[in-house]
Structure formats: C-alpha cells, structure tokens
Image (tube, rainbow, N blue to C red; front, side, top):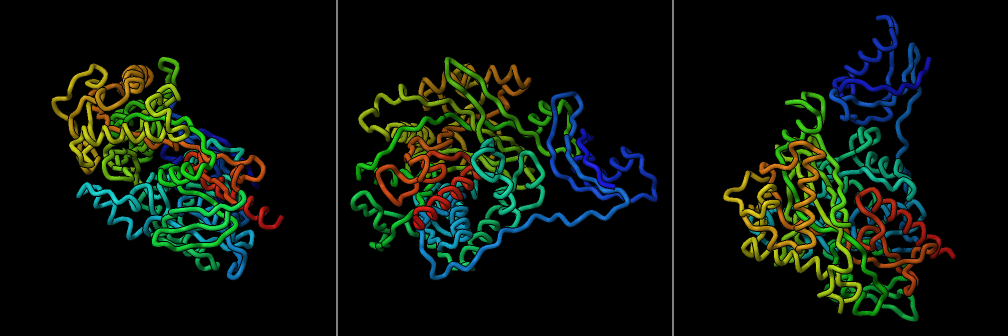
Length: 519
C-alpha cells in the first residue's frame, strides 16, 4: 500500500533516516512484521514555536516494493563540429548556458578571465595571507565565478523563471548530495562546490565544448548593429555571431568597455552595508529557543528586514557556521562576503546587513551616467581600504558600539582571515547607510532578542550584493536592443541574483541563442 504523508516531526526524525523510519512505523501503527519503505520528498524547519519541528513530505510503501525513483540525469550529445556560441564567463550562468547549448546541439566556447578551480586557490590564499589581490583570479573571478566560493546556497524565490528542479538535478548529477533535492533551503557548501564545478567542465569538454582560462575579453567588434567578433587579452581575435555575456556582478572593466563604445547601459538599484558576525551558538539559542541545538538540528540561520527612513535594510547571504571572506577584485579596495562549508561547523554565523542605494546617493557621480552606482560602490570600498591600513585588513566595530558611535576598545575573535582593525564605521560608510544601519540593528534586536549585542562584530564593507549596472536586453529575443547576437545574462547583466536564478537565466539565454542561430 502506498501513502502520501505530510507531517511535523521532531528534529531527530527529520534529520536521521533510521529515526524517521521508526517514527513513521509507530505513527502508522505498523507491526514488527510489516515492512516500510520511505521516500522523503520535502523537508523544512519550523522554529516558530517553543519546540522546533521539522515539516516533511514523504511517500511511504507498506508491505510493497517501491518503484525506482532516481532522478534522471541530463543526456548531452556530442557537439564537435556544430555551430558555435561564445560564452563569456564560467560562473553559474555561463556553465548552465554551456550545458543547455550542448542539449540544443550547439558547441559552447567558454572564455573565462580567471584560472581553473585548483590554480585559483593559490590566489585566494594570497589574499588571505599576503593581502595581494589578483584582478583576474580572486573570490569573484575564476572557474565557477563568485558562486564557487559563495557558500552554495541554492534557495531562490524565482519560481516562475525556469526549471528549478532541473537545475538542482544537474548539480546532483555532477556530485552534489541528494539532500539538495529535498531541503527547502538547499545548500552545497564551499568545500564541495569546486569538485562539482570541475565535473561540469568535464561534461562540457567530453561533449566537444571548449573551456579557455586566462582569457579576459578586452574588446568587442560590432558592425551595423551586429556582433562580429571578440578580442582577448594577448591580441587573440575570435570571429563570432552569437555570444552570451555572463561576466558576473563585479566585471567593472566590461561595463567600462561597453560604456566607452556607447552601448546602452542602465543604473540598477543595489544595496550596500556591512557583514555582521555573531557566535553561532548565540544565533542557535535565539532561533531554536534553547541552550543547545542538539545533535540533529543544523546551525540556525536568520532572515531580517526592516524599513528605516523609507528604505529597506535587510540581511543578505546569511551563512550559518561560516567564514567572512575578502572579496576585493582589485588592489586598493576592501570587499567582504561570506561562505559556509557543507557541514556549517565553524563557530561563527555571518550575514550581510545592507541598505538600499538610490539615485539620490549618487549626486557626486552623476556625470558617469549609468556607471554612477558602480563608481559610488568603488569609492566606499576604497575608503574601507584606507581605513583598514591599505591592506586587506577590514575596518570593524562591535555592533552596539557602532550604534552608540563608540570606538571599540577591543574586538572579538573573527573568522576574517586577513584580520580586522577597530575603526569608527560611521567614517567609512555613507551617512545614508550608516544611520539606517544603526536604527536597523536596534529594530532587529527587538525581533530577535539577543541579536543586538556587542558580541557581534561588523566588517566593512559588504558592497557586492548585486550589480549596480544593468545591461538591457529585449524581453523576447534576450539580445541587447542595440547589438544583435549579444545576449546579456545572469547577475552581471542584472537579470539574476544567486546561483539558481543565474543558472536558469543562463539556460534561457542559451535557448534564445539557439532560436537566433536557427531563425
């Protein structure tokens, strides 16, 4: 007999398959002789009450052998000798665009400015230990893009933008754990993502696609409103008629290049602030209403938002059991972000806490037009670099001290490896940001009792929440309205936010490129 169940179960049953089997056997009043098979389909944590519950959806079979239900892995054809599409960038948007092109029978040629995953690690170590930033290989640039070292969160609200289940299944097919197909907030982990990215690259190569590292785009050739070619670093020229531009939210040189060539760009609203770090145990106690979360519950996360003086202030990229990372893409700037390993077992929890940036903030940069937001963003990052001592040491302040405008006489331990320096962050951040953050932290403390505390330390500056520039595109063709054959894509073009939405946008652009080449 087959049954569908939707239940709230204790954490020990929700996160342990043997305990779940015993729990459901008792719930269904089964005898010892009856055999039970359980297929968990969905799982989420409900921590609203005093007792934390885990909501599950499961299919069970009683005294019956269940049919095989393994997800079907995508099948990719050989595309050697097929029509080519250039994919600029090997982040989530670029990789999923390439895989979709192969599905469509087209040959992707990926051009990635940075290095492969293994070589990239040396440059990340150099940022952490030596404070040296390689502008082509860092936490944002290189194989897998910013997604490789951004925690591997796969949750998205973009339910109508594409096939979320298909994206998750592609990750699973390339080595991600099966739990990402079940959990409401799926997560891979920064330590696991590099191997998955390499597996995707191998699939692309085995099918006849190409992947070229250290291949930064330096120029485009446009003729009569059409894309005709691309020039790479070192004077390499590539003739092409279709290119998916998936360079990520930090490729400022691409925005500058398009701006210089009078290609239409637009300002895109974004957000800027700090990365707040608490002891993970404190967040667990607040969220789970207990002294210790126990053996089965994962480290707790949080999501906060508050309107302050007509602007949203909200948490961004919350990383339980995580690390605050140095994510500058050029020398002379400080950028912070966060990530977590798969087990989320570090002693700290961190999250970006950011304020909406609006055109009225950009008056000093109005002459830059669509790039005004980018220049404003860069100016704050440079101010943080100066405040930190012209290294990757991050300016920092305890949370309550920041609100009370007091210099922190000492700073708590931090996961930020280049180190932190006590600074008055009101002198680093714009007034429109700092003042709203101060009010928001008090409000967040009312919502999460214990969140507003001097045990928390703020790192400046969290500034790469999304691109400050949109590269527009036609709603139907997905091509730039002025450049036929150029498909702006993903976070870098302003059409995605996060790994899954970027992946889905890459797939959409690949479909559009297929239609264009076959029209």
